[in-house]
Picture 1 (spheres, rainbow, N blue to C red):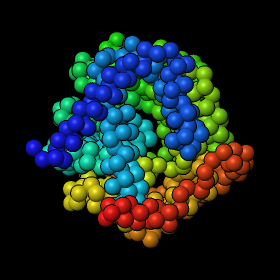
Picture 2 (cartoon, helix red, strand yellow):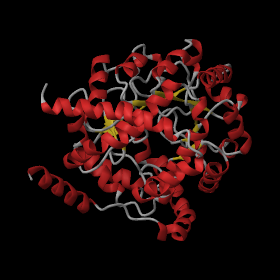
Picture 3 (cartoon, rainbow, N blue to C red):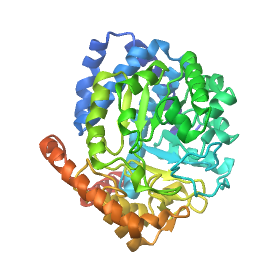
Length: 468
C-alpha cells in the first residue's frame, strides 16, 4: 500500500467513525452545554452573523430531534456534512481555489427534465426531455465532486425520482449527502421511504404551493394527498425532510403564515426552502412575481419563522445577509442541467461549458462562470443579490459580452422587450425598499464581497505554499 493511500484510509476512518461516535456523545448533552462548546467557534468561523445564527439553529433542531431520526440518517448526516464536507472538504476546496478562485461547497444537478406533473409556471418546462447524461457519467461526476471536496449535492429536475438509477447512484456514493427537490408523488407511489431510510444520505424536500387546494390547483388534482402520504411515511421512518415552496403574487402571504408553517411541521418537516417565482421557463409572467413590497414582507417573516419555529427555513432572495449575497457561478454553487451544460444557477439558464465534453474542473474554470463570479462582486446590496431580477442589466451585460448558449427555448426572452422593461421597473422599486434596510445593518457585515484581486492573491499564495 502506498503511503498516501494509508493516510487517506486513516482519515477516512476518522471521518467515518470518529466524528460519528463523538456526535452521538455530544447529542446526549443538555442543549445549553452543547451550544456552549460550539457557538463561539462557529461565530469566529463565519463572517456573516446571520450565517452563524442559521448554523446554530441547525444544531438546535438536530439536537432536539436527534432521538427521532433513523440511526442511518443520523450517521450519514454527521459523517457527510460535518466529517467530509466541513473537515475533510476544506483542504480539497483550497486546492479548488487555486484552480478557479472560489470554494464551491455544493453542486445542483438536474439529471432529467422529465416529470410526471405539468405545473403552471415551471422554470424548466422548455428543456429537452431527453436524458443526455448517462448513469456512468453521473457516477463519474459525483466522484469528481468528492475529489473537489463537494460532499453536498442537490438533485433537482424535472422529477429526480423518475430516473431508475437515482437511488442506485445515491447508494454508490455514501460519502455525499444528497438533497432532492421532488414533487413527492413517486416517493408515495413507488414506496421509496424504506430505501431512503436505509440509505440515510438523502434529504427529500417536497414542493408545495400551500395547503391541499393551492397545491392541487397548480400541480394537479390528487397531488396533495400523495404528498401527505409521503411525508407521513418519511416522518415515521425517521427521515430528515422538508418542503420547498414557490412564493408567487397570489400565495406569498399564505406560504409565510403561522398556519402554513405549523401544518408542515406537524407533517414532520424540519426544513423549508423558499424559491421566489422567476419569469423563466414556461410562459414567463411578471404578474406571477411577488411585488417588491411582498418581498420585503417575506424578508421580515423568514427571520420571524426561524426565530419562532424549529425549522431550518431560508429564502435565497431575502437571505443575502445569511449567505453573503448571490451564491451562483461556482462562488458557492453551480448547476448542471440535463444536457450537461454547467450553468451559474438553475434560473440563470445560459452556459458555455459542458460536462459531456470536459471535466468538471475545466468547466468550473470556464470563462463564463469566471465572469459571473466577477459580476457578483459588483452587486451593491446583498439583500437584492440576484443577477436576473434584482440586477437585470448585469445579466444582459454578461450575455452580451460572453455570448453563452441559451439552455432552453425562451431563455433569452428576459433580455429584451416587455419582459426586460418589466424587470428593470421591478429592480428599481426593489432598490428603493431594500437599500434603506441594508443601510441600517451594514455596519455588522463585511461588504462588498471579497474583491477579485484578493482572490487572485489567495490563489498565488496557495501556489507558493505548494511549491514550498
